[in-house]
Length: 109
Image 1 (cartoon, helix red, strand yellow):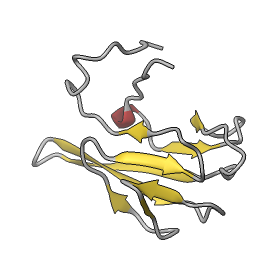
Image 2: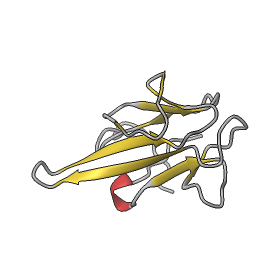
Image 3: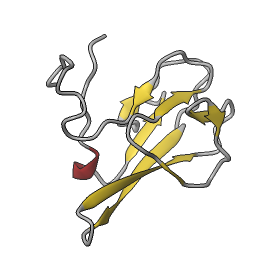
């Protein structure tokens, strides 16, 4: 599949999971939980930055940030080019900032 852009700053939070009725980004893998993890952000007006944070929602098979399993129910700050994986899925989600993907063909949907 071609990469897709999700504008984090335009949403209150982004829910990852296999329950398509509630998940903003479906994980579609049998080892993922219905509600796997949530991505929130904090706007820092004095710096003009948006800092994203990921939290595992006590999933059975875990959420992984750069290959390390996250402790459940705890926020972890994310940095540009951090990689998220869920359960035993091989699909990777990469955090990019505006302009990071200028060299990539992105599906506008």
